Image (cartoon, rainbow, N blue to C red; front, side):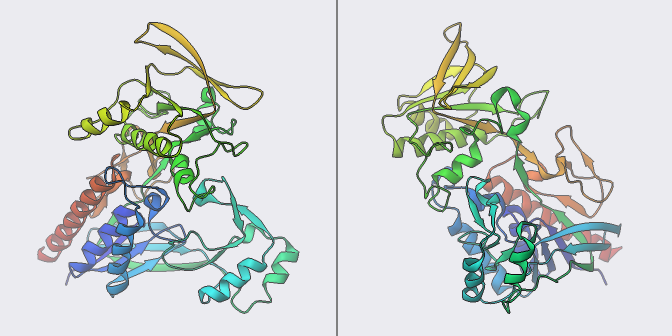
Length: 414
């Protein structure tokens, strides 16, 4: 009899989709996520494009499907360390990190309030802080607290150890499972702006990535939804967007991430809603608004937006932490040198496999995207396979489930 269990690695929108689709097809599913919660980058987005609605509505529907399906086992704070075997018979070793705290929300939140140690809030890309005992974010699923033990002093550890729900002696665990197929959906990361030294990425506080802008615009973000300069929390009146920051570039990522142009246009609307009189400039090589999105593009650029066709060569910081962008302007046939209060880099979508490879002999393209067909029975899905928006990622995850089911059936027949 064939092994009809499936391992899904990655708890973002692709992994969640794959898990619920496979489980509802009758498979036993193990859903593994290295963060303490499910949802991936979608949880950090302020509004979906093009519907412009909060993402948590769609996520909650999927979380309900997970809660109600006994075929799904969710394993957070976990990473796959080893895979061996073949299609229909994979042995997998999973390392699970401890949370160090376990109890109802009220009990754990009491511990969090008593904690004095702080940590950079990675959910908001370090733009604010949380306690070292923290609830990951407002809509976190599973709804459980976590302890960042590395941020605790010995004195703080002793104080926390007095709470019944805390166990700082908890050790990592190894879980071994056997599955018939694997879907790898570990998603993407924004290209590291620290690698864009000519743009001051990581050095200039008021140069941020587009995903950081999503957090600034979110009511659950570091500024309660008010778009403010990180350096002094002042309202920016002159904002520039720089397209293709680290993508379509032989020195960084060669591919086009396909969603950055539309993300920028969406974020222009964020700014217009808060600051109707703000001066907004978009630096671009070309705007890729495919098909029906052309109308959205025309609508946004019609809102008194300056469009400079040219890729900036350098961004400099002034004494008051404003930013000066040096760029060509192909329309005007001249070099420009304009000053802004805030610069947003439209960074590309870098696959997680650019740095964290699948622990088998899988193949990857020049930018690190996983190439299906490398290993029978293991299928990459979503943005770890190619750049895409939420709808595309959901479709790709469903396709991966179909392939996984087919591989199991073929193994059963043979």
